[in-house]
Image (cartoon, rainbow, N blue to C red):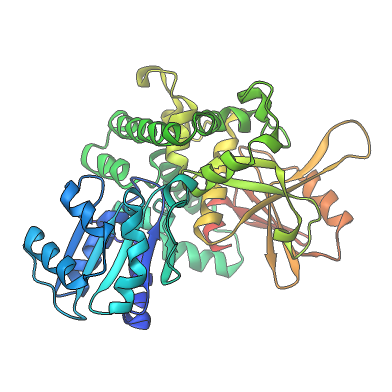
Length: 440
């Protein structure tokens, strides 16, 4: 059982809500939702019933077709699960609730009854076909869950000190020193290679073998393919092409290169569904980079990232047998070629999303030639913006962020270059080691 930060948020919900709302834990499959929810139930309640709708018997599912008699419903659940429920001291879990829409709709009446607490977990839960025939309960509070962030990964591999030291180093605003920097980069590259999927981390801890880790990640990706294809085959194709599209280094995801003759404006629904699935992250182009980024996003210009960089690594080389794949060796020895820099861009996207940031980027034409400047990520703070540029390898140039600052000097609060080198400042440009991204 891995320590997860969402546990404290769930505990806060329990104490503050006191049964007035149900909690919906939303996220991609295989990130540990069911595990942490059941652990929460064991620790915080006298008893619990966990209904897994992916394997629940038909007679359990049909109990939610008619919830006019809650006494009967609760009696049946206790009999079938052989669990005694205690008023205000028991939890009922609807696991994979998107597979039983009537159960989700029943939350309104169950919460109003106030006898027990309710937690739902769901994947692909916002897909229209799963909710189109039901009344979405307003009595839900939602928590977004992601793969393990960097600190959670360190906890999982038994390292309870590095992250707090990193925070102190970050707050000091000083270089960390060559030897410490090399150690921190080595550990961070390990996180990029393994990723934050609990099954992959377990495989790493138990075997210390990247072939076994990669095998686990391939199974997860196959599961995602099947899930997405059930919804819309186009979504599965768009997902699978994410590494290739980032490798193009284009100013947007080129939909027509994946779906022949398709345009971005024709796949707005599939992109939204892909985002809702939590398997992928969407960064939208901000047409007017200002504090109100959400008001200026261009739905037809976007980039896609995987929600887990460990899965990204495997997906990028999924067409090769593991024995032919030297990506892990290159990552850990810091010998990634320049054209693999998109791995760093993906991990920054993952860390920003885990911190609650919506993802936006910005491009604008250079004065000479046909190329464009690009700011990898924009964050809003107060009434200004923070610009982020991600560099891999030994890159030290930062023409895009310099040009952006000159163009929008009155709007920029801070600007950061995230790179693989030690901390330094160049005027008002703060050059941060990429492992400091969790603190932004």
